[in-house]
Image (cartoon, rainbow, N blue to C red; front, side, top):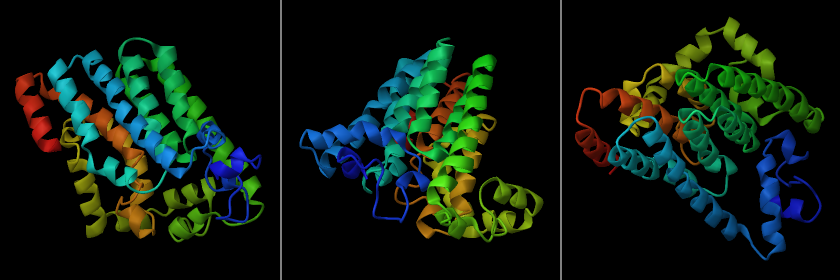
Length: 303
């Protein structure tokens, strides 16, 4: 797709019979097209992906200190993110831009924590460029901004994110598919009564028995517990942890076996959200326990 774009065929693909934007809206791919003009190839994409994911630990550390965590505890939180098995699982499986949205997401948290509301909104909106369902990450960042007292900025961010979701999923993608069914219809069609988009969500809201029964299955619950355990401090911030609910539901309700097990790259967007929730949990914990003891526990858990 990136190579086709570099050759003057924007988002052309051989995977489906329509433009790739009808399947996934990832404008960020435009930034990688010049790499092919400079002699790069798929390997250079993988190098950049790993580098950006690693660099994301820097704004995460800065956000942790801005939230009032001791510097050693902030280092421990950054190391826990870098050691997250779901992050490495995504990095080992091909090139997917949503893996890299942790960088602007952590930057947004740092900005909100330091009173830079406009910068926070800008960083959070940049997340939308990585994939259409990254709107769930943007909405999570709006919730975090609200928790930090940046309510006007949270409202602006949430409003723009909702509008972007309606534009991409409700208008752009169906038009580009030109009557072809979405691959989501296969993964969620039974639960959504055969409907797509907002109609499917309405159907699920009216008929909750099917998806509730699916979420309560042993394998789904096991996946949920295992993922949450990769960042144990999320259990200490239950209110902020609600930001994980939409993304987890999207994965766990899918009939795609790798997706509902959070294998391959399917937890890529959840990892930065869980890392942020974990910071709120750590902040609550250090009010009762020595910061050095907490830092040691975080490092040991990551290892």
